Image (tube, rainbow, N blue to C red; front, side, top):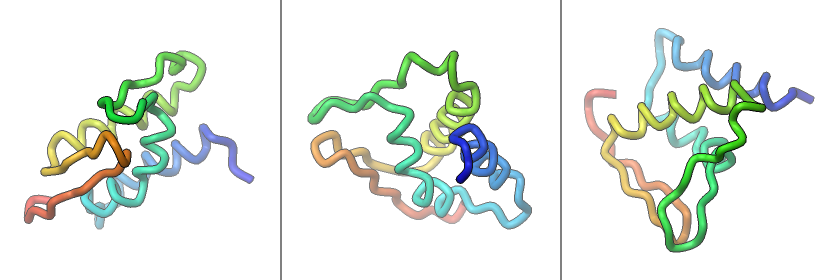
Length: 90
């Protein structure tokens, strides 16, 4: 079984693939992104503060956030879900 740092290393490596598609990558890795958050029901998500212990978590969180901000999306703070709106720039 892969360690958590190894999982995040593999996920981050996918962003360098020549066939990388940010829309699919965001959708595929949303549960990992949620693991890097404190997300109280009904409130916006907050980045965990324990990242000093998990450098790869921090790296993943930042890359995911960067791609998410560049993609039309909506976070539902009650159901804690993500809706991505396709665009042609991915």
